[in-house]
Length: 269
Image 1: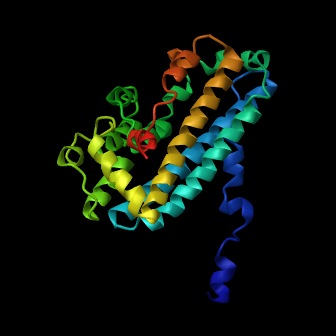
Image 2 (image 1 turned 60 degrees about the horizontal axis):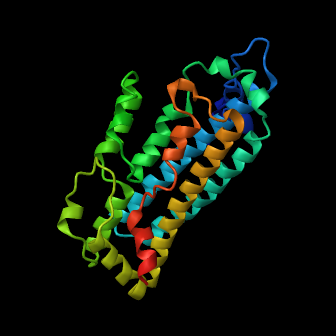
């Protein structure tokens, strides 16, 4: 860079590179006068959305590695996502410092807003194979978010891409699994489980990748469980915001694995 160009270029600082002024301007409370704990509530959920963005970024990269027959490279992304999931759980410890009375002081300002409406979390579910077309229509009012979720619905899940890789690499996967309707949830297959058992017995490196996928599944289930308990602790049996059933709905999502085959084989060794 010439001295002239250096003089004309704006100085890059920590704040300008990270857009700190813009970032710190986004925590706008709805309560007036401001309720103290509303800022905490906003920050926690905005941080969740940032982490969801990073998790999607990492898992999409992992899937690209699978498509290129390089699962060993995708294992790095899995390890990073597992660390992020631990942070997501730990954030609930912070949120639980807010008592039911403190949450109730501003809860009515949320109106119809609900975590149920997080398009990124629905994208994550779809990417992992936990698909429900009904969720897509809930975003019909927002064309951009609707299109994003529809794309995820119609695309093969991470599990579909993993099974396709296995088939290409000589581990047999039945055609009815490879050619299934990918807009439907992933379901267990005894033939797939036979292949997985063979991998565990004869291919340690690939078995380790399978264990990392199981860790991912377990980590997401752990976050769901802690989220349910946080909601129960904060609002009890009340209806959730946005017309959701609150803790009652969240309980229905518990203990539903993304990769059922990896769990079903545990009793077969």
